[in-house]
Every structure is written in structure tokens, then in C-alpha cells.
Length: 92
Image 1 (tube, rainbow, N blue to C red):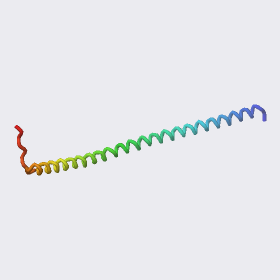
Image 2 (image 1 turned 30 degrees about the vertical axis):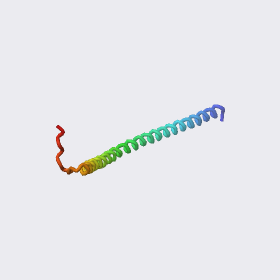
Image 3 (image 1 turned 45 degrees about the vertical axis):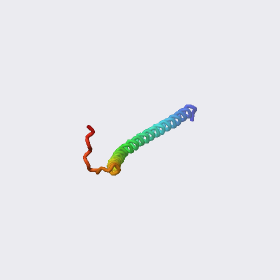
Image 4 (image 1 turned 180 degrees about the vertical axis):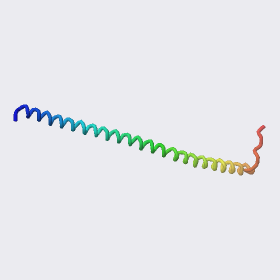
């Protein structure tokens, strides 16, 4: 074999190694992008699942507040000596 054959073989092997390195870096970049998009989907799904839970909690709190106001009103009217079902008097 001549020197030209060794040089050609060397360039061919170098080209193959560089092509493989580029190919693996492209695959790694694709996998990284897929992972990041999946993370975005997971966060959006969590946010979407959080909204109904928040509304459910707000409804329970609203019911609790209504019951509390009703109970406080009854206790105040008992303390004042007026029945809770009595019609409120006009201030004018």
C-alpha cells in the first residue's frame, strides 16, 4: 500500500468518526427537546388539574362562611333578645 492509500483511509475513518459524533449529538438534542416538551405538558396538566380543586375549595369556604355568618347573626340576635327570624327594622 502506498502513502496515498493510508491518507485516504485515514480521511475516510476521520469522516466516519465525525459523522457519528454529529449524528449522536443530533439524537441527544432531539431527546433533550422531547424531554423539555414533556415537562411543559406535565406542568400544564398540573395547572389544569389545580383549577377545579381550587374552585372546589372556594365553594367549600363559601359554604363555611355562609354558615358562620348565619350562626353569628343568630347568636347576636339571641344576645340582644330579639328573635332571629324577626324582620329588621328600618333605620329611617
